[in-house]
Image 1 (cartoon, rainbow, N blue to C red):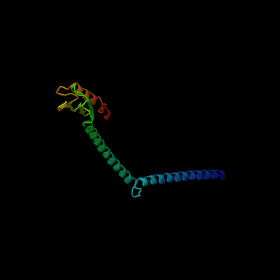
Image 2 (image 1 turned 90 degrees about the vertical axis):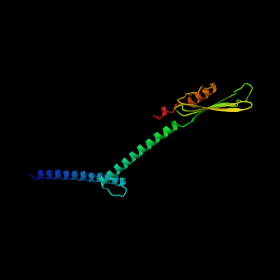
Image 3 (image 1 turned 180 degrees about the horizontal axis):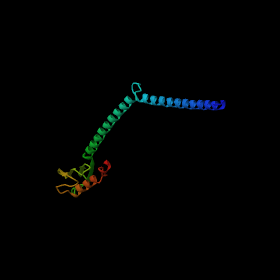
Image 4 (image 1 turned 120 degrees about the horizontal axis):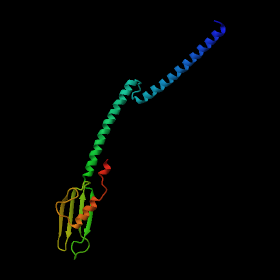
Length: 166
């Protein structure tokens, strides 16, 4: 081999060595970044990647279970709210022609399913009478007066919250 070939081979070897050195330095920098990231995930500062991954998986499993439990609680609370007597309407009126001031009233108190009660108080000059009628599904087994029907219609006309639950 002549000197120029040896020089060319030496230059090529140096170039390959420099390229290998650059790749090694880049790989070392990436590895140190990965170790630093895993150290940030690990509570006690050790960088055992398998242990950190297992710890993170355990945390994710606990969070998933907690999220499932919270969803169940929210669903249960929504059901409780739908069944609470929270839709109220009152109609005031004069039950008798000789009385003024609209002292008689009918009040409907129902849940989101239309179950509840209608209470009416009839005020006369010498006495007052109060009546209660059960409501199931927006209907009563006892005939409702026009004022009671109006109160019930007003109470059940509120927005249907059962559709908002989905």
